[in-house]
Length: 182
Image (cartoon, rainbow, N blue to C red; front, side, top):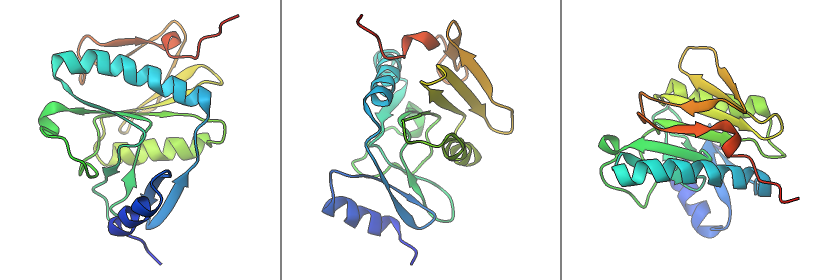
C-alpha cells in the first residue's frame, strides 16, 4: 500500500511525539538521534540563525520541519538543519514547506548508516538543493556535497563556507563538536 502526504499528516496527528518522514510511499519513523548528534545539530542551527536572522536572509529550521519534495512520490523529508533563502519562502507555513531547502545538514547519529544519509542528501541535490552537508562526529568531518560533483571533506581547522548562499558566513568545523568539561 502506497501512503500519501495526507496519510502522513493523519499519522502525525495521531502520534505527535514521533518524528516522521514519507519516503517512496512509506512512513519512516525516526528514532531519537541521541544526545551528541542533536547537540551538534543545535550548534549548527545556532550559528546559521545568528547569521541569517539579523540579516533577514531567509529561514533556518531544525529536524522537525518537513519539506514536501517535488518528486513523483511527493516525499516529505526533514534534514537535521536547513536554510531556505528569503525570496523562496517569503511567508512561513504551519504545514510542510513545498520546496527543497537551499542548504541542508544531516548529522550522523549512533544508529545512522552513512550511505543512507548520503543518498538522502543526493535526493535533495537532485531536486534542487544547492549544498548538502554530512556531519560525522565520529571522524569529526563534514562531507560537503554539490550537484554532480564529488564531495569535499572538511576537517578540524577547516571552515565551512557557502558564499553563493550566505556570503561572509563561516563556520569553523571544530566549533560544532560537543564540548568536554574535564
